[in-house]
Amino acid sequence: MCYVAVMAKFSYLYQKYDVQYATQCLQHASSVYTKLMSTSGRDAEKFMALTELYRAAGLYTYRNQILEYKDFFEDNTSYLEETAYLYGSMTYLATRQPVDVDLCTVFMESIRNRGEELAKRSHNMIDAVMNVNNGTEDLLKRAEELSCANYVLYSYQYTEILEDFLHYLMGRNRDSVSYYPEEGDAADYLLLIAQQVSLADRH
Image (cartoon, rainbow, N blue to C red; front, side):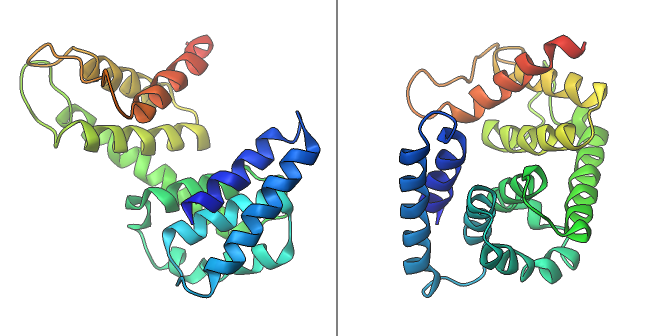
């Protein structure tokens, strides 16, 4: 389902450059989703794929399937631990297609509350002279969540915390080590850096 989500997102973003090719990508994503739908239950990756398909295509069938998750989100405060649910909820909030206002409210409140929680304990997550967190992977995950909260409700405090996270990961830590990988996947780091650049003019 991640493949479907990526193809649908690419189609949405690429349509301003080549409508025909973007449409082909969307059709392919939709076809793959239809084949996988019967074998997959209601899970985070499927939700993420649905939100990307809905944003790109606007079909009511995708919208209705998204709304089948509504009770789950209303009764669950821990769904943001799943990155795919976080990405899917952000896509749903950002779409220009018709949306369910109540579901958007649930997403916004959950993400905002998560941001407030992380802001309160951020000083316990990074320290220049002591190891106080669960490693870079966990810190990057919290940075993703805080970035989403900052998108929903811009906060100078969130921006400062994200900046501190970035400094910590790039060398302002106990061992003066840059955790930026010389090889392999650096996507999470690049996202954090890109967000800091995009917010620079707000300071």
